[in-house]
Image (cartoon, rainbow, N blue to C red):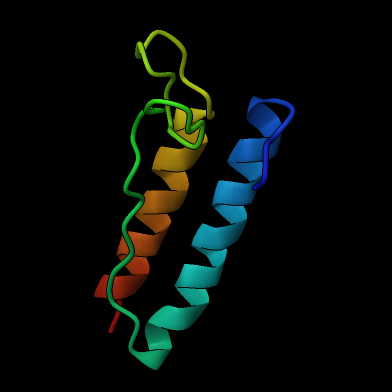
Amino acid sequence: YVQFKNSDEVTAEYVKYARELKKMVPKGFSAAVYTQTTDVEGEVNGLMTYDRKVEKMDLEKVKYINQEVIKCTRAK
């Protein structure tokens, strides 16, 4: 499994995949789901820690790139 050293690394990886999604929209791709908003049990791939006290990504950057993906699905 992949484990990131800090918030910058995990945010950059999330943004990288969101940019890939944007490229796929013109080809008919219409949805993506990040299923784990918080860490659970032994898994550490959530947006926040298990207790929800620490945001593990730069949520402003996540919000921005998510909005960019949404915009390109509406462009015609």
